[in-house]
Image (cartoon, rainbow, N blue to C red; front, side, top):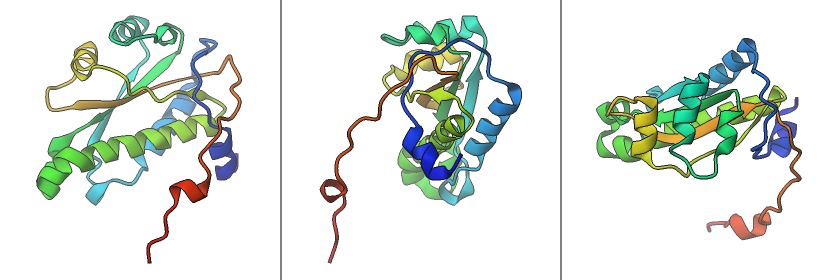
Length: 172
């Protein structure tokens, strides 16, 4: 799929058919995330892949209105690893760059999933401590985004976007 077609066709999908995602597609998605740019190439993030139904249920129990977590075959949890970024960038690395690294990697994964005919939805509405406990994360990691990935069972129409003249500002 052409890159701009991927961008135009990506939608937030919350209804999945439950079919497993092929390992080669998962690997391609993870490789796309790994190719994401990061501050100083420190890759200050970790990805936790949740395929086990019990672990997905544990994760779903920490969220509101996320029943589809029991159906979606895989959830990728993107976690900032501030310690990796702090070494080179001090507090700015800890407080900003590590989070940016994780979100850029998640965006690459989301677009790769779309290119492979899969669907996803960015989930950021969660309580960090509960998600950390559900995933058994080391204390140093901070969950930033959850990305359920699977085959879609719904079609979502494109949403209206703000016109460019409202969001782009020329500086003179």
